[in-house]
Image 1 (cartoon, rainbow, N blue to C red):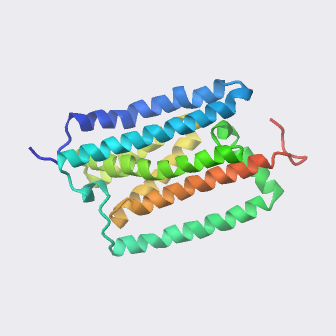
Image 2: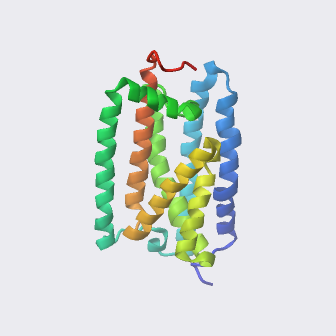
Image 3: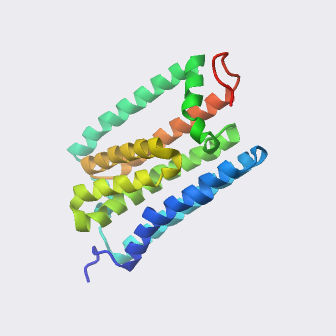
Amino acid sequence: MNPNAPIWLDHVLVVLLAVVFPIRASTFGFRRLVMAPEVLVPTVRLSLYRQAIALQWSLALATVVLWAWRGRTWHDLGLALRPSVGFWISLLPIAALVAVIAARRRGALNDHEAVASVRRRLRHVERMLPHDRRELWWFLRLSVTAGVCEELLYRGYLIWYLAHWLGVAGGAALATVVFGVGHLYQGPRGVVTTALAGGLMAVLYLASGSLYLGMVAHALADVHSGSLAQAAFAMRDPAPDEPVV
């Protein structure tokens, strides 16, 4: 038996990633936040952070156990660190991204109108994002979890699975679409933005030959988004021209 061929457990895992998780996120996740009374939103938000952390690590662990049990090579999952020319070249855009994010963050937090603009852009997902230091601490844990687990699952594993029928390029393209659709609860704009980010992570993975750079980039991007949102919400006093919701 070919250990690299998908088996029924692989099919179940893909259904969880492509169907069950997106439905759960939209119904039992975001919907709970939308329907919760204002006074209960912080409690629901922290509960969802913790649930997401537990679910993602559990699924990632199950994937690794299945992979080891089947005797598959870690390189095919993107977990074999083999520094190559592509790996070192891929470090450059990561370093540039960090520098740009740091500069834009400093500028945004020192400009009242920029902070107000951040709040307006995030209004449709405000209930999902951290509002105080305790929530931020849990969101940072969730960011690291997403960076490691989502890259392992949606880039390493899902691309490997789909490549059996579509080839690597086709598998990466469809995995990117699945990743975007998984964020349907964020609305059309959120789906497109997430899909674009997933596409960039897929390119980074295929160019570098491993998932590690993508994990770091993904985690840093989420950390930046959450910490910027928390800082903006903490500076809640609106400018005169900012509408109050």
